[in-house]
Image (cartoon, rainbow, N blue to C red; front, side, top):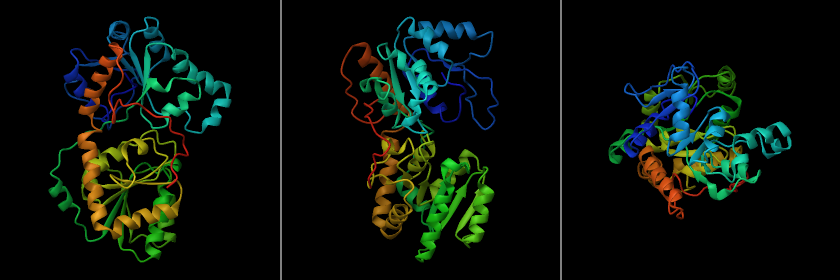
Length: 376
């Protein structure tokens, strides 16, 4: 269950339907979901906010063999825990502003109420951020009850030779996608462009999205005389974004710790982009093996950002190898089908009190990863 059913969750729901005899997705908020494609045949959706369905939801919460709690009222988790039946909390990291927030009584109380009080109950955590397990370890929640998870947007099946052919650009093409918000740090993309230009490196950068900082970025491009190198493409549909990714050589992710996951990384890797991502984004440590299927830069180190971009540009073999491995990582491991299969296996392992034998990918053990993990 979660507050809404959005396009990042549809594929996983489809796979859960295949793996489990009865599957329901519970939405807890009546919100405007314009921009999210809900399945036309979404008979599995229940609406907790609908008075006609509320009692059925509560009945399923009590009786279901397993429940995954996303964004939902605490009282539904509490109801389930009264019966101590197998459950999972699906969560990004709690302390996005830093571990010091635990010193604030209200913050600690909030996390304890959400999950900390159930550390000895039959509930586990699906970490939709590489930093979730660390945050929970600070309140004493057992790390062995935390498993890797994430977001699983639609995975496209490409013929790799055809995908690479689409990326034969006249100039090295860098793509940035996101809302123009302070914590997504679009200015780092501009700093990178400025450094590439000053070193006479030929490239083109496309920035997709909108937001409060867009006008500031536009003025910065004019001031730095970068308008011929960096193009603000505006808002695009998810399908259009994918088309840009299929043509791009490199995908740039510049967010700080406020980026709980970053599903655009999944999509870019699936589209055969050589990703260069900040170490701070929640998806980075799970999805990217630095130097193999992508690259990581220590946020906000512009010199490292430049050096790793330059390596992609100057080494065609390295770039191509990275693009192939990026696509393979998503098509083989980090996708909705594999997540659903692994989750079903994990449920069986827990019910049978057997050791988790899932070694990597979704539902593998989540390690305790401090936020200063990356040294470069």
